[in-house]
Length: 84
Image (cartoon, rainbow, N blue to C red):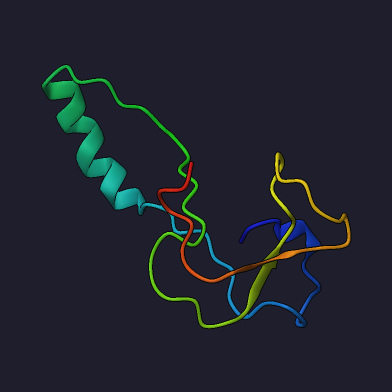
């Protein structure tokens, strides 16, 4: 959820979840990493709007560096993956 702190309970969202690996996956991978002397790293990856088609209208604040009226907002038409 992008900017999830602005959500209102049971009003402006349908699903919010955090996919995590199962403990059984760690129990399988960690012994292999030890056996083969591999390093294990933990990381967080932000993938908001990366996959799939948008089912709802999504509006966002105007990005920094774009000059326009401060009352304007942007409508997200497609996934933002690949933008720089």
